[in-house]
Length: 394
Image 1 (cartoon, rainbow, N blue to C red):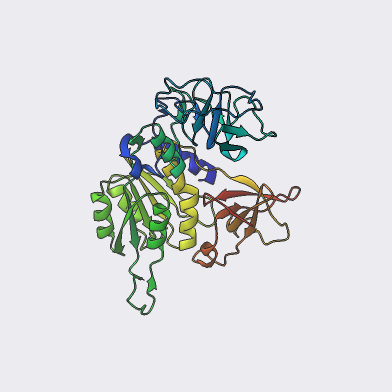
Image 2 (image 1 turned 30 degrees about the vertical axis):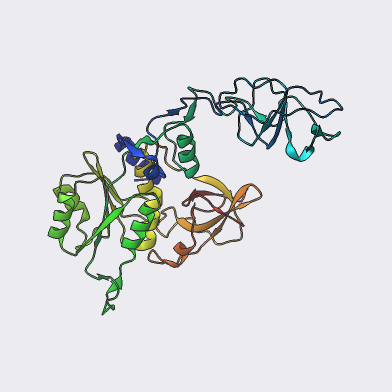
């Protein structure tokens, strides 16, 4: 299946997850399932933005002014004139402006204002409802809750928010050659890098992931998949056509329907995608670079669909035409190149991180993007999928 068709297939098979209410302290990183509307104006009253004096008139006159030092929460009974206010405190409706205290002096006769002080209408007053009004939508549905969004919700009096239900994920590492420290490799044994990588990729998206190792046992793999009651299964290795590749069979025998069995992509050709009810499962190539590419290009589509969000799309980025960009493999498959993206004078610029084979982990240590194919011969731009939310500055 072609890459674009495979991404459409994944998105089309998965519906947004139901909503759950989460406390604000647990909501960061989640996606809102409903819009949040303000229940009050913000600010809720005319507010001073400076420590100073609220003035009733633009005409301060040459003489010292009497100052009322009292401040009622309800702003009742305060005579029109001059009122001492602090930053964030309410100002009465008669206030023409606020004069910062740095431009004033107090002596025995009262308040004196510097001759060159501006007394413009509304100066240093934040009017009621100037940020938003009661009933305004302040967080649309589909908002990824950043710390700032959580703060905004808190300012509206929220203690919890409706968000898409968190994903329950399982990663299965196949292959009897995989070991974990502190054991030392013997013969053809290697350390498992896919398990920690998948766990980190999911944790980056606030998705906890438990791991299982099934070796080369098809019965163990089938048992683990059959018993899983969560949402997402990612199987490392075993998705190809070899004698030790049991992933497709295990999916089918445990009730999954396979929708994708192989994609025209380098790396990533052996990708499998299947569903069982609300569950999704991916068979990923065993080599770590291939697995990283498949997660970024295909698994992220599933995570976006579950959150009711569009999948991340390729964007055009600048690059140096003289750098080494591979267009396709020897069999004609379009190629993904790990890359380093950075902001450069308001545009995205990418540099390739050449890879030698699909098990090459070196480029992944600094990659934050995937470049697709080769640069355009006329514009010098190349399609790029950003894999990290914030490309670093140069």
